[in-house]
Amino acid sequence: MARVRTVFACTECGAQQPKWMGRCPECGAWSSLVEERVGGGVSADPLAATGAAPTGAKLLRLGEVDAAGLPRLETGIPELDRVLGGGLVPGSVVLLAGEPGVGKSTLALQLAAGLAPAPVLYVSGEESPGQIRLRADRLPALPERLAVLAETHVEALVTPWRELGPALVVVDSVQTLRSDRVESAPGSVAQVRECAALLAAAAKRQGAALVLVGHVTKEGTIAGPRVLEHLVDVVLQLEGDRSHAFRLLRAQKNRFGSTQEVGVFSMSGTGLETVANPSELFLAERRSGAPGSCIAPLVEGTRTLLVEIQALVAPAGYGTARRTSQGVDDGRLALLLAVLDRRAGVDLLSRDVYANAVGGVRVSEPGADLAVALAIASSRLDLPVPADVAACGEIGLGGEIRRVARTDLRAREAVRLGFRRILLPEGAADLGDVPGAIPIPVGDVAAAVRWLRESTPVHSRENGR
Ligand code: TYD
Ligand code: MG
Image (cartoon, rainbow, N blue to C red; front, top):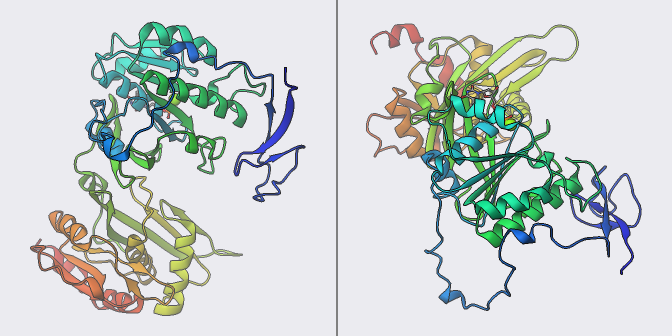
């Protein structure tokens, strides 16, 4: 029997070292080395008994491969199916990641319920069957035939898996699992990776879809960093602010579809509900006419979302000025403040600046730059952005406003909700095919701020609308 050897593998780059080090010499990551055993100590795949033995792979010509035949399991949640690229693919592994409390277990249970009457195995290492039942009672329809199992031991899944022959296996969460093959504690990188790999292999063998629920850490990484992302076919990220009802579901990686799609849900008393017109919800509480607010039309996949960007500029107390943002990237905010200060003469020195995307949305595209900058300038100058105005454009370091993709789509959504005047980069000012849109081309930030200073006060203009 081969001798058992211990190596230390980097969870970032995979490089192996004979002894533990604080920093990986290959990729420079700190505290990324974890202990792993190699050699004779490893037993046979414990989940091999779940299905047929693996057969030798057959040599195929690419032309003979039937891609259209990729079957899909529809989840009964159209919004989720769209993000997945048409439904779950049998044999595929989906990682559903998100912060604690965002609604991962709820979505997983709804997904399991939606697949009925196909057999589904719902494994929970976090909740007892009683707790799962309580949660299920809140959903619109109780999935009575759903097989639930409170278990954290991977090897113990063999028998129920074989007996049920499920079309879908949900594991909530992958961080609670442990396998006898690894000695480290549940939740450690080595355990998470080993358990996920075993389950993924079993799912592939069986042709069952596998959904792994995974917590993300405060820094936004899926614990242990990145190890699961390589292993799975699809990474879905459920985002949202717990104090708001909105939840965005994004595909960060998708081997079977686009990563551009986003699903919009709202957390209600009866689970996650699909939101058909997110813009209307995002803007429902908007007070027009107040300084420090601007509408940004964002494009997420095939969806357009109108999001209100709010800013508040206030004199700083003693010491350094505070810059706080929610839903707007900190680095992006710092850049926009510097550009406003240097290129448009908006004095922001020793001012506290707060910037928010309303509704718990996270604005990730630079197309919102112009709206963020206008909201800040509007608050600083105490001049409201007129209530029928939306703005889109990326801002460069020179203060220039650059084009963003799908301006027509953004304009159409803006007009649909009554935002007829749209500040745009000069190069994208042709909105001929968007009826009702009034483009306002601006070349740089200075021009946008000038426009704001000259625009008619909202009260005299908007009462007639
Ligand atoms: P949960 O799915 O447990 O989050 P996660 O698994 O990501 O940690 O649910 C999070 C919150 O959602 C919880 O605080 C309760 C709330 N919730 C509702 O508002 N409505 C519902 O119908 C359900 C099931 C949960
Ligand atoms: Mg949970």
